[in-house]
Length: 167
Image 1 (cartoon, rainbow, N blue to C red):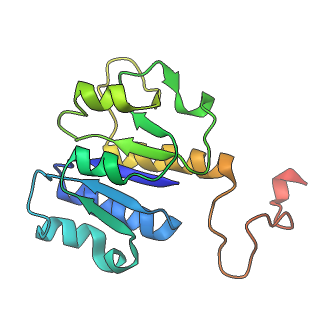
Image 2 (cartoon, rainbow, N blue to C red; image 1 turned 90 degrees about the vertical axis):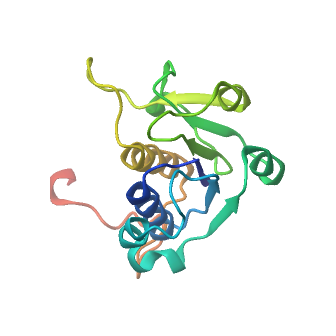
C-alpha cells in the first residue's frame, strides 16, 4: 500500500503525512510541483525527525508518477465521490491519492483513478483537512488488508490482547 500526494500546497500537511507514512511504514509518492519550496521550514517542523524514516519518492509531474507507479489500483479520496470509504474493499497494493488542499485534483486525474471514495461529513461542511482524511482512510485500508505494523513485542495478529469490556 502507498499514499500519493498530488501537488500539496500546505507545508504542515505534507510534514504530517510524512510522519504518518514513517510511523505506519507506508511509502509516500509526492507528485510535484508543490505549492511551496520543498525545504520550507513549516514542512520541516511538521515532519520533525520522522523525515529520515519516510520512504518518500518525489515525481516531477503527474506523467512521471503515472509512468513510475507500481501495479495496483489508484484510489482517489475526493469530496466528489458517492462511495463512502468504509464501504470500499481495499487491497494491499492500492495507492491512496489525495489532492491539493486548495483545489483537489484536475479532471484528468479523476479520470485516471480506478475508484473514488469519500469520508462522509455533516451537511454544510466543505471538507476535512487532507492529512486527517488520509489518516482515516489509510487506517481503514490497513485494517482491512491486515497490514497494520506490529508494535514492539507483539505480532500483527496478536489475539491475546483483549480489553476488559469485551470479556
